[in-house]
Image (cartoon, rainbow, N blue to C red):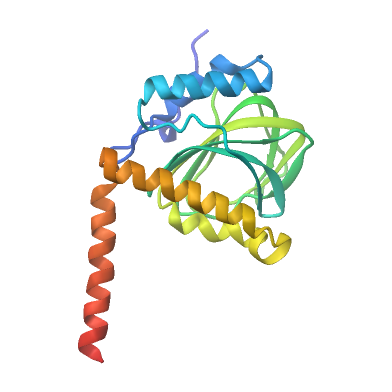
Length: 223
């Protein structure tokens, strides 16, 4: 029996480092392992496939976003991509957020159930699913981890634009400023290391700085 064709959204992007198809193959290797062993295997395989781009230090922190709470570990961060391990061992649910970016969730343990606007049947994803859950740009969903689930999450697009969704619950609700500071520091460290030591997203940074400089110049002229 032939496998279904690989969805178009799993194709690698020209501007991006990571290939979703490769990430999917890596997560399949971790299925069936105890959670801690699965995470170590995924980290090792990512580092082998993308040497120098993966953080191998386990820095876990809670994350509150869209009403959901779980644990995350940042494996890669840049202006246009991030990779994390995310999950919960007791379950959670919430709003996905609406982004200009694409989000892929490669489940390697447990079950994730999603609901979309205008659809009346849930979308169920398990560790046995052939392909990852996909959230396209501008799309939202209601998601739920029933009991326990862990996933490799990959996002590509404009990452800084996602910061408000990922931090406002902690800033204005839980008042967990320490976690926000830890996340911001770790993200900044990985992003700057990628730019200055490996040249990743250097062009995007220069374009952004040029835009800021032009805005400042125009404001100065007008005033």
